[in-house]
Image (cartoon, rainbow, N blue to C red; front, side, top):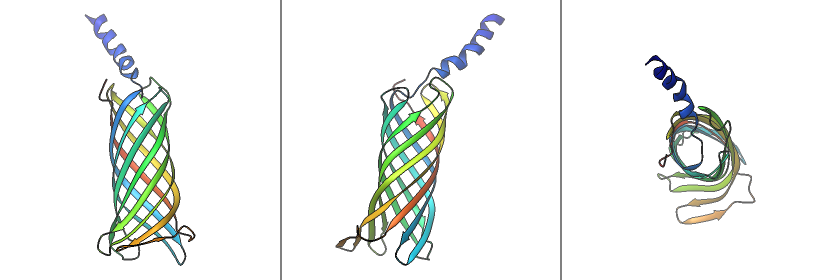
Length: 190
């Protein structure tokens, strides 16, 4: 009896550690978003909360390809009120220490951003890249808890006010973003 109990205790972490990042995964997270705008005549940083969703497929224990979306409600730093920031991303996640319960991750993504103020019917759109790192902790073979920090940057290239759209690629309308998230990652077919 004692021997079987000891074997179960010793083998349980090994069974849990066999999980890896191959196959389909779904992720939902919450966190904080910050965007620093740098343009002609202004330099602002806006912050707020965000919701992040992601779906990906691990093609190997190391590499996962994914699509994701985030939505944030940011407070304008110049008293302009709150506005929405939505992003879409296409990226790759590299998961290290395969087969371990705690695994570091590195994300690299192309991102499209849209900042929209519905009250003034004003919108800016652009794109950029982001890089992030974090950690996944397996709580079962099909579920992991995670935390990550991402930073990125790019340029807004289009402004829309009402029904008028203006190409602003020649203007200096850059942004730098950062976000911190915590969330759950599920592997539904394990």
